[in-house]
Length: 220
Image (cartoon, rainbow, N blue to C red; front, top):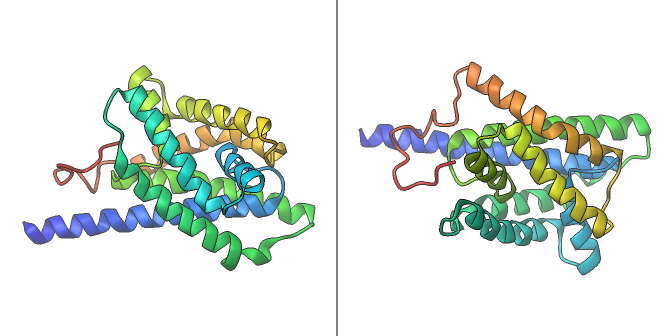
């Protein structure tokens, strides 16, 4: 029994890390596309350019603020475990953006939009994958789930609400808003919902690796 629990926990960890990596890869592809990026990422880039520090650092700082906001919506103690995914993503984003994928810069319109579309799909599927582990969610995705819990609305709707908030803040701070940002604002929630349903249909509900083993862990 103990070995079975360890195996399930290991599977959850691998799914979690893989999902966060795919998500981060998508974020960086969209940043490199120069066509406009996801609202939350545009906010992080805007803060990085306005105040300083790396984009990954702002992922962590903004995420920390959202953890407090989410606790107010759920009327619960702040989910400090939420710092785990934003710490991991912050590292992934900085490594990919500043090192491994720095060569992706291009002025070719076809390549730019290709990068954007790839990034959008990777971002959406990364979110859907890491949620399977039932480990702490990214604060802005926890915001989506918190609103869903409070209202009963679908994640496609609540994800769009969160993206809209970030979109407005990015405009105020003069972040890298473009046509791509509008596309993300309108489509990301829908695409995440589609991948979520697809993974469910192929036998991967969000609780598949935590059912019976998630006592004491964060539930999403």
